Length: 242
Image (cartoon, rainbow, N blue to C red; front, side):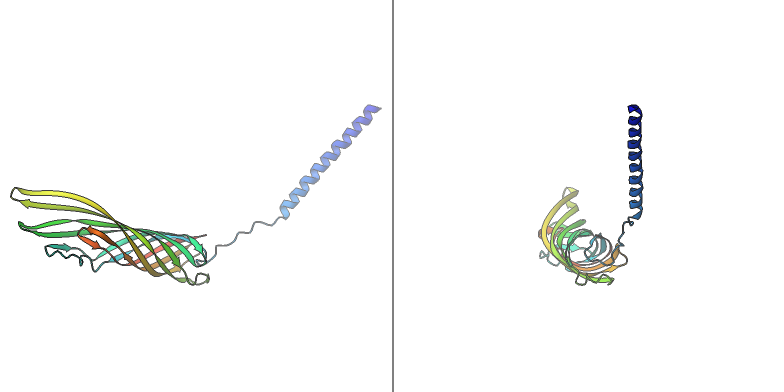
């Protein structure tokens, strides 16, 4: 008799546990079905509080190249324009301000120097390459207007200018002709200031254009020239993201 009662009690307990598990699973499934799907926010337009990264390319005009040479026996033949490539990363700081990190390179090739010596003119040729590394800030005055596609901006900051020169020369004396190659590097502190626009084409893409003045003057001559300062006209593209 006691055994039958024991079995019945165990059957009731097992039935109760099984029913509880079924009800709990059903309730959980219903709760999962009732939960709304996660809301995916669409990308915001404009450039407000966004980071930017990209590249620009354009001419670097140096009309005064070689004007600071005072030695009458030293003559430099070089073009006043060279193309400049600039990579930039502009993370958002606060409000309408972004940090401006930039790295550029410009090669001033086909340089030729003629030095008048007692034994006759000596010609050297080669190239000079400049690497401006800039750190500054960028200001978007109308960045809060997210629907404004054309966003004016201003950039300014300091620069570290690294310059290298490669020089090839043929020297003649009473013993014959000699050919030599030399290379040197220079480092100078400079600054830059620019104005331009961002033309926002989508939530994550923009075209950009800048007119930028780059001060680049060395304390010692680089290929016979100390002052490589000039105006750059740069056009490029930027990727925008938060």
